[in-house]
Every structure is written in structure tokens, then in C-alpha cells.
Length: 276
Image (cartoon, rainbow, N blue to C red; front, side, top):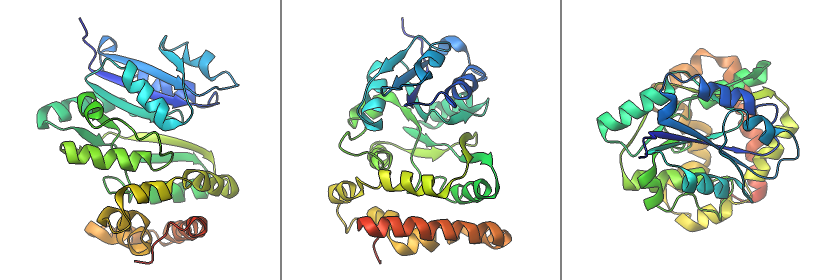
């Protein structure tokens, strides 16, 4: 008899620096061990990622070619009623699984957004953390704790998308059921900030923006928010009283808008930023 409540799916590729902390945070959950399982889906790592992962779970697989396919593979192997999908450089607050399960069951939810804190070293990591807090529960965010039945019903992640696949999954899930935001947090370890590496990563994940936009249409209201200049560079930071937080931290805000301008240049190069 299957008694698994939550399947945690961790996608990896050459993550030996982060994977132990991620899986240790899963092990430390205030949640019955027999009610959860951890599935690691690796993509041809050449370092010790899989070796380290096997110290925490026997459910370590190799599958690719990209993150969407890895996540779908994890969902296909999962036995839990709910899934939580993570990147290997993320760790969980101890109460997260318990809170998410109870909230979804009590309120009959299909999924939950989970607030994300960026951790690491230096001023620019503080800027990244400041920025990330404005996105929680918006169309710039994506659900992470999901009813597995609903994830399967909507067809999982679109494997033709790599980068915006979480936005695509999020909006299809919202169309299928009710979603809310959790209180417990995920911590995203970005280490020491490197602007060149950061922009290179953004450029890599922007390659499929055109395909995502074509799927939903350039006139789609949510597409206009996600790629429009006004919402991405102003609206999301002002709505719902968030302007107060912006005004209270001018130095962090200045750093944030500098990074947004740098990313905007990358996106303009790919033709995915709208003027509207």
C-alpha cells in the first residue's frame, strides 16, 4: 500500500557543491520520513553529484536532455500525492513540507507558490534577494508544491521549453485548480555573485522565450506582463503596496534596477522584451 504524501524531485547536473545541503534539508524536515520520498534526476553529471545523492536516497536516475524532461521523468516515478520540485542549489526551511501539505489539504489547493530567499556572499547577493522578494506569488513566480494528479492531468512540463517551462506549467496548473502562497521558505544558494556568469545564465534560459510567447500569443495579457517593459521594470515593484519596500531600501533598489537593465539588454538582443 502506497502511503507517500510528498515526492521531492531534485534535478541536477554537476551539482556536487550543492546537492548534499539540498538533500540534508529534506532529511531535516519536520515530517514523517515514511510519508515522503526523494527522487534525484541527474543529467549526465561528470562530478560526484550522483554518488553524493545516493548517500541520501536510492532513487537516483539519469535522464535528459533538459530540466523539463528531468522533471517529467521525476513525476512519472513519483508515488506521492503531492510533488515538490527543486533545483539542487535550493534548501528547505524545516517546516515547509508539513505546512504545504496541511494548507493544500485544508484549502483544497492544486498548488502553492513558495517564497524564495537568495543566499550567498556579498552585496550583489543582497540585491538579488531583495529583487526576488517582489516576485513571490506573481506571474514572474511559479508554483513548486503541486498536486501530482493535477500535474499529470495537465501533461506535466512542456519539454519543448527550457527556461520558461515553469511559467508555462504554472499558468496551466492555475487554470486547472486553485493556488495560493505558503509562508515557509526555500533558500536558493547563489554563492558569490558574478555578473558575467549571471547574464550568461539568463541568456541561456531566454533561448526558448520566443517559443513560449508563440504558444500563448504576443497579445496574451500574462505574456505582456512577463515580457513588457512597464510591468517587469516598474509595475511588479509597485503593486500591492510594495513600493514602500522599494522606497525603504534605495541602495538595494538601485542595484536591482542596474541588474534589470543588464538583463533587459540580453532580452532585447533576443527580441523578447515588449515596449507595452
